[in-house]
Amino acid sequence: MIKRIEFTLNLDDPREAEIYQALKPSLRYRRAGAVIRQALGTFLVTEDRLPPPLGFRTVQEDSAHE
Image 1 (cartoon, rainbow, N blue to C red):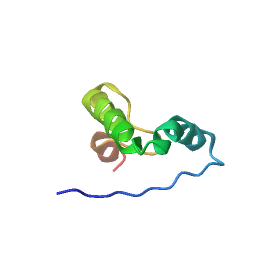
Image 2 (tube, one colour):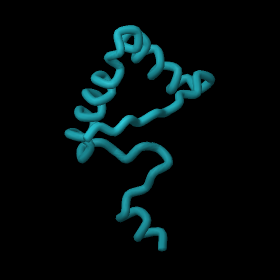
Image 3 (cartoon, rainbow, N blue to C red):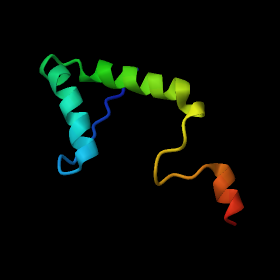
């Protein structure tokens, strides 16, 4: 099964504008999906070594605040 996922980027946000600039060349050749899959695959493989993204707390952190 194939699932299409759409998302928007706020180009006024510098971080999201950088994401767009990185994807822009692959958009021309309809390869952005492959770039996104590769980046997420790399992130997910090393996720346990990275701190959680800003604005997110781990389950352990949530338990500590209760």
